[in-house]
Image 1 (tube, rainbow over the protein chains, first blue to last red):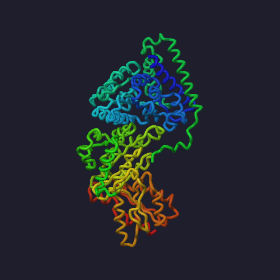
Image 2: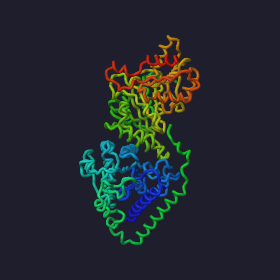
Image 3: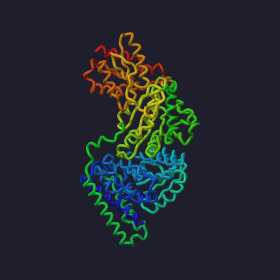
Image 4: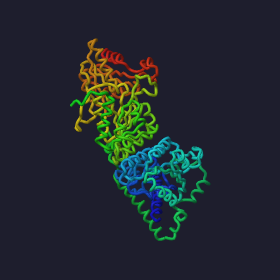
Amino acid sequence: MIDLYHKMLLIRRFEEKVEELFSRGMIGGTCHLCVGQEACAVGAVSVLGKNDLVISTHRGHGHLLAKGGDPRRVMAELMGKATGYCQGKGGTQHMCAIELGFLGTNGITGGGLPIATGAGLSAKLRNSGQVILVFFGDGASNQGTFHESLNMASIWKLPVIYFCENNLYGMSMSSSRSMNVTSVAERAVAYGIRGYSVDGMDVLAVREAVGGVLDAVRGGMGPVLIEGRTYRFVGHSKSDKRVYRTEAEESEWRVRDPVISFDRYLPGLKAREAEVLRVQQQVEAEVTESVEFGMRSELASPESALSGVYV
Amino acid sequence: MLMSEMTYSEGIRTALREEMKRDPSVVLIGEDIGVYGGAFGVTAGLWDEFGSDRIIETPISENSFIGVATGAAMTGLRPVVEIMFMDFIALAMDQIMNHASKLHYIYAGQVNVPLVIRTPAGGGRGYGASHSQCLESWFMNVPGLKVVVPSTPDDAFRMLKAAIRYDGPVLFVEHKLLYKKRGEVFECQDSEIAFGGAVVRRAGTDVTVAAYSRMVDLALDAADLLVEDGVEIEVIDLRTLNPLDSATIAKSVEKTGHFVVVEEGCKRGGVGAEVAARVAEECMEFLDGPVMRVGAEDSPIPSAMSLEAQVLPVADDIVVACKDALAW
């Protein structure tokens, strides 16, 4: 339980630090933060095995940290440093850590869905015993890749868990305007697979939902669709003024903050005051060290820009 | 050593069979490639031999099954995908150009994507606008993607084997009208399996004509026609478009001083535009006349065969282009 809290707090503090560094111009490009969605990342990944694979989205720092990503190397990648997971070539939306079974964040909405499906096909044909968990958002569930992938995974009975982080908005487009069903999980019916909708702010509920199907998915039952209903407390990206949603709505969700209101979801943890304090101090140190590591790392060398292109 | 005389289609099938036997990680993915044998019968018989674990028949979901193949390639398989008609590749552009071609680079070499996408291009059969195009020029603009365009059964056989063994993505463009073309196919040892650069199909002294896929045969027809006018053209088969073997072209242009490039796809913004620019950059001192391009007219491909013939290039177009190049 304390580990779940630790990971969620790490993701929260890491993302807040990224936002700060971005504002100070120390991180370039763009970035999509997952503040508010930590319970989905941590709950879902916490039940996976070491060899199981995770495939992520454009909002993927939390997924990588949940899979065991080293915050120093994530931060270095965001800063474009040679010590980053992809040596500065990937950046926030194209970050991979193969040794952790993390098959990449992905800059195309819905782009990771077929790749995860293919990893599932490969796992099945190679009898590797792996389960593939792919994150995507409510917006991606309107892409053709969502429908095509779930259909193929279903007919081939692939060991894939499709985890939708439904944060209610595809950039500014409310899911109530982009789809005529109340939950993404309902769409499972169309592919003849099971669909579950859970409270995506409740880390234990997410953990239970994924953990509850894991053995069956690994055992050949076929894919499952799980929707965690969650909320991003920040904008879609840095330029977002959030004019499409109300302060009242944001406040309602803030009450359910999976990190600040952790005692609501992790009963009894608050009483373990000393442990909680220790974790908080540890997280502060980890985040500080990630920034220092990033700062003192060398920029990727200019000549590396053209290395590693096929042909 | 000569294996046998076979068709272009049989050359492809033989390469698939040999590579699937050699390496259990090679799988085929695509529509109707099982008992049906593929829309053009290229995979006929392989289903009986290898079964459903090695031949993955997909629903009609081009973008995602290319993505499936990419994900499988990243995790230990070597998929060979068939896109039934090259025109349908438009449905899969995101997975090809944003994912398969880029993941190795953007993930700093942590993954390889040993993926082959086979697809028949080309007109000449009256299939109309959505089943007849040559779209390879689009893919020359995608860094990280090899584009190969064999014109003979032997090249199809050998280059497909090379593509399957290559660790990056390869777009393997076949041509519908070449499937029944017969030719000698030679056995190749592992050490001989390579894409190979451009090759001179007919030596000549007056004009260099670079072509690929079915247009090589048209260029050879044009060469016969031009002999009557006392013109000897040198026909180069490009064989791969990315990378482009400009050294072989330059060597020939140094000799002839004139250059024509031929493609079946749209001339505007086409393969020839890139090849011509490369010749302008690298061969200016050898040129005695303008670089000429032959390609399809700036029009969708009409269905009626009589109209289609007005849009697609024919051997006479190459003859005219060569004469224009020389007349300057």
